[in-house]
Image (cartoon, rainbow, N blue to C red):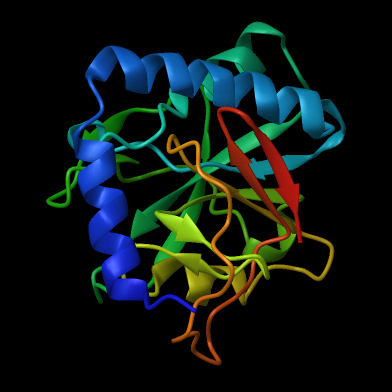
Length: 195
């Protein structure tokens, strides 16, 4: 069993060590893996996160641009941090959405952000992570934002963790909390796991 804190530190260090060109290459592979393993064109709503490039997060823009380029019927939404610093609201992302970077370095739709999308509307959510275990429990940055959000989604919503680190799930995470929401699947540049 592994504790979250050392898993988080190791993953952040591994990701920081990746050259930008390698992050870009792996991000393209992640895009291909998503479209290979999931029925993206059949979804009505897909929740995506906009990457923090300085943290070498997956370049989700490759997925977003492919959805738009192929004119797929799936609609996209992104999170917006609320003033309480604890909760997220979700707004549609279109090619015309104006974005601004918040104080965490995350791009968000500018107010007024357009129609809010309820968590229950999502068919799938792409979830950022640093590590995951064989039961689908994830290690994120530790703020609990995504666990609170995923707990509000509908029972049919699929939670898909996504990482540029091409690593298999660890055997187990020792300090899983009752509020942690497990993933249904996990994507890396090299493949997919289902839980």
